[in-house]
Length: 320
Image (cartoon, rainbow, N blue to C red):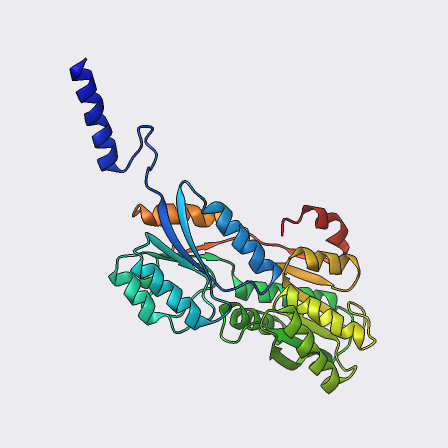
């Protein structure tokens, strides 16, 4: 009996030393420091919920920080994660540039970094392990292609106003680039005003009001870098006595429920999907980088294009 007790004690000791439970699963949770941009839109709220659900106990210990759309808050959060010696850092950068120093600090501390949703510009891409998110340039192209198709038979000029996302952010830069790439090939189209609405409904409404005051009724199309700005702009258009979706055609990006509701009501013409529900994919990447396994440098999520005639059928299926 004494030998059996000693053998059991030895097995438990070996299990503890190896960091594994008797069933072979990891006994120590993976500590993840995650810095989110903020809560500026329906899309962002859905993304946060997806990440939190996937990085839940007992497998993960999540340290979450809301940057409130300020890069300085995000850098402070990353440095706090480094000081706390988390296993993995994941973050959605507010803007593309200005990350070199803090990422080098993470690298020196041997803490792998996973970029989510938005990319960064650094001189050495080994400073982060992988990126998971969307192809923002392609999203802009999809919006442009929809507009070209929807404008068949229409004479020019077709005057476009553009609500940009946060200045310096990857989606704002890339969505503009992709959209212009398509419409610049057709001389009928002209972007007459372009200004940041900071990805929020309130700012989208404010900037659209300014567009309407400066351009009057000489606006044919609104291209918004996200649905929330488009929804704010719809309110401004209605308050100006115009019919959104008719007097001014509107295409935006994200595919949130609010956009489908607006399409169903005939106030939004099309939305380009940007899928925020990649929490489970992120969790697997974090498992892999934490274990030192190789991962792809870029992981893209699947997305579609939805128009007003699809809204009623698709709305009940939307998860965000």
